[in-house]
Image (cartoon, rainbow, N blue to C red; front, side):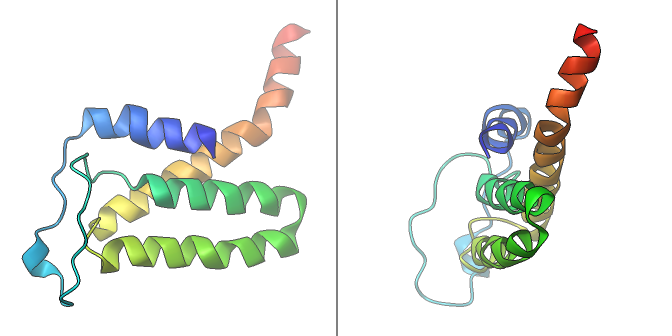
Length: 114
């Protein structure tokens, strides 16, 4: 999760300064204050997907269970107007990539040390 959060919030958001969706696009009346940070990509989605993917690598059934909240978070981020769907999609891809990197990192380090 930490790698996904760093990649999305400290690297990608700094590279793309995308504004949040306009409040007028939100169909419901309750529009909460949204952060002023870049909308692209979704750090919440990146963290949720990274967590569920990492869990699935060890316990597939638990990873499937953890995927449900990750999907709910991604949907909520678009529904509340915090993100565009593409922000969430790239956040999910960032989470997958971060989980894959962390999963493979020990083997890569051992291979380099030999």
